[in-house]
Length: 136
Image (cartoon, rainbow, N blue to C red; front, side, top):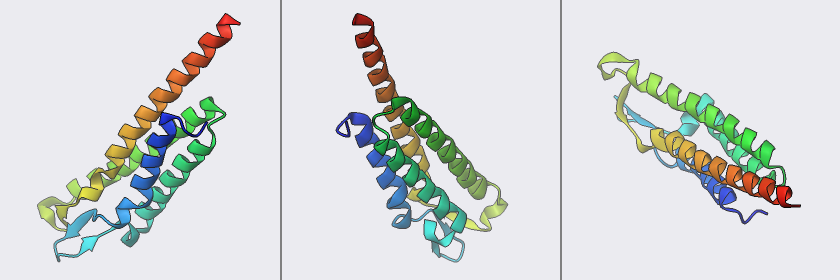
């Protein structure tokens, strides 16, 4: 059933990771050049993988356990991406390379929040199915 709330949350994650990093800057260099996700190959690949995992999780609506595991993998990838952003922005002392942080650095945080909400809804559905099976 694609119309469940976790599918909506996963669609938001797919939109956040698939579209927004290419329109909102991640940071601004000291030269004043805005850096988007398509300027860094590793970052753009990570955002594409996050998008594919979210869409794959939506398609796996019949198998809730697989959907739950895919979302966990997606959360781990988002944490690594967030760690890379933090490392990139804090490692360089004196603001040598990163002059201003952009709103795009918060996209993994919002993705993690929506993935947690989706996993919570999946768990609620799984518990409901188990309770119905007990009654039979």
